[in-house]
Image (tube, rainbow, N blue to C red):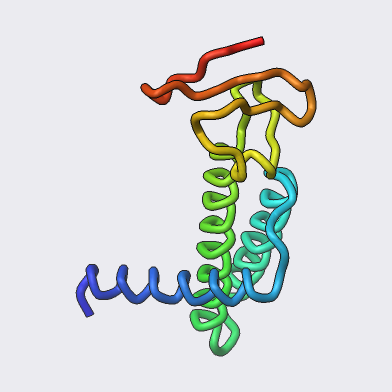
Length: 126
C-alpha cells in the first residue's frame, strides 16, 4: 500500500469515527471539555503503546489512534463553529448564526450593537 493509500485509509477511518461519535455524543461544550476528551483518547492510545507486546496491540493502537484523530477533528470543528459565532466584542453566542450579516447584531452578554457592513468589516454603532 502506498503512503497516499495509507493516508486516504486513515482519513476514511477518522471520518467514520467522527460521524459515529457525533451521532452518539453531544457537541463539546467548551475547548476545556474538548481538550479533556482528546486527552482521554491520547492516554488510551498511550496505554496501548505501553502494552505493545500483547497480541493484537497494533490493531488496538489503530483503533485508539483513529479515536484521537476523530476527537481532534471534533475539536477543530468546534473551534470553527465558535469562531463563526463570536461577537466582535469577544463574546460567543450560539444565537448569532440566526442574525443576518447586514443587520444589527446585539451581543447576548453585553448588549453592545455591531453590524457587518457591505465590505464584511465589523463596525460599531450605538
